[in-house]
Image (cartoon, rainbow, N blue to C red; front, side, top):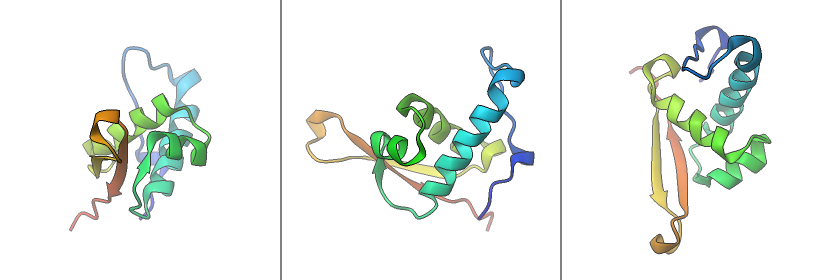
Length: 97
């Protein structure tokens, strides 16, 4: 499964293509490529693997739910003691089938 730059369309009141398009495109592609294996990872683990800030990783995981970014499923569950609030994420790729 490959996500192409051509199909990526960001928006939002704070989005300025001149400054944000290349950065956000790189982020979502790095997160998507890493998560393709279906393994469970925390935001921190994804951030360390991609070199992107945790807040950006979280935003890109939310984008992957959207139709224009593939309508993938990002599953979230607690890691360890639920009271600690640590979550981990796994990507279920929408193959269109």
